[in-house]
Image (cartoon, rainbow, N blue to C red; front, side, top):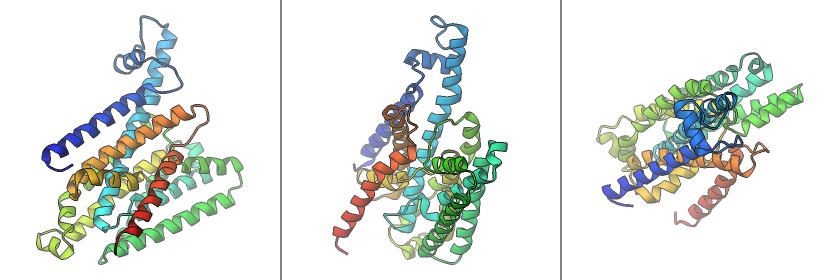
Length: 342
């Protein structure tokens, strides 16, 4: 979709689709609350006063404000952060297979959460799990940034692979040595990724980090446009490549680390969405960023709605569904790149 008018129409369409999916996320669920009662309980806090008793109205308000609203807000923020970070990393590293997990942030955040479950801290202090996950993400970005000093994009990739491998090995060790089978089961379930049973506390915890990370990533657009001409040309245009890498790494760590801290590992969104959006916006990275953010938000919201509709009583995990959709796309991408001339 070429031209400024077409690009604006695309963004408007994506924003509308995201808004519709956000509204659906607020109204879909096992509670069986009608659309009018859902909006009444969410906006006015009385849950359809004309047709329900006081206890029913209170339950509706609780469901809407403490269960469905946090879930929809987290789906919106997490999807946007995954899509945006994937687009930035693919442009920065000039690698079509780059995605947020490449820096080791997701694996390290998962390791922090696993240690909180393994040591029992999550049972003593509910916020210990997301806080430990955030600490793991911070540790990962410190290591990757330290290794990337003075190096190029290959150094970032290698450092990220090393951190990811180490975090995955330590997670496997925790599972292997877990004396409590219920703790091991909780670790496995958490690692599958889900927005179930999240509250406004999780929104307030992750929201500032997600917003800060997305703000840093959004500032990379102009630099990524220059990088399409090559590193030397970008430097001649006044682009500070070290600063761009710092913003990309810190932004990804902040946004994706916070997302993983409250929702677990949700894979393939950061890989799939930029590739879906790129043919629509053209070869301009700065245009790809907002489109990928909206596309990621729409994808996660749609997947979370599908989880509730497909298996409402079976606790189907969000990360499982995104992987089912994303893995075949990944294979198709590899096949297509193999057929392209070198």
